[in-house]
Length: 285
Image (cartoon, rainbow, N blue to C red; front, side, top):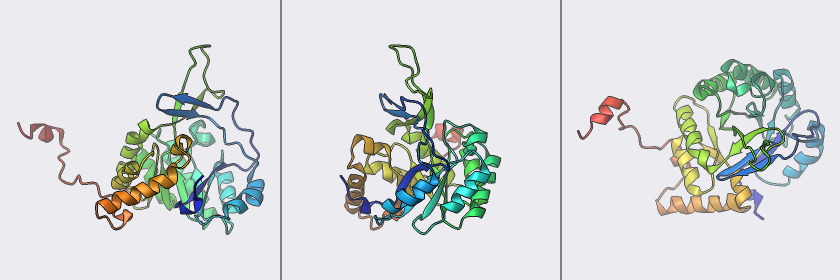
């Protein structure tokens, strides 16, 4: 359908140590502006992944980012250690699975949990380490700073939003796991705000994730401070969306005389904006 070699990187579906069947079905439900999914991280375990899946990714040019998840910091560290093989380019610690609680996988809701688990993973691997954060954190800037302090090389902002859909024909939850992660273009402004706020405080790169469906979405994320973007949902709507966005982004830059797309990073023009509410309200009065 598309030339995968044109992409900036390939992010594998999150893996766990042991084989997992995943959550009960149904695992996906449509909404008016996106989907709610609760897949449950199914897979055949890390040995199968290393033996059979990694070699398939190695056939392509883009770097392989392996997302991993665990319910304990110790196992997280061991996973990262085992993933430190030549054909794995980046380890992404998914510390923000929305259907897991703080002590069972969604570490990114809390600064101390984040610092602890990222620190242990950092000590276990010399691979570039990305920390995938949660949009449900009370203070995502504080969590981002904790991940940076613990040794993360980049931050992925953000995972999906914990959501619920109820069927009106039988009054039952639409997903077998009740709750799921919402992915939707409607959520992009919320994640964009988070990227902007975090980018003002951290010194490591940010990968903006959430609701990207067109080149202008990529531009917005980069203006807010993201160095790159992750795209997933758009592929459900249009299998050729990923390469189409690359083409459209290049055309957008050429049209405006922008030589390097990296010039967009953090280039939002807001230095002259008055943030004091009383002062701002008095302008023009």
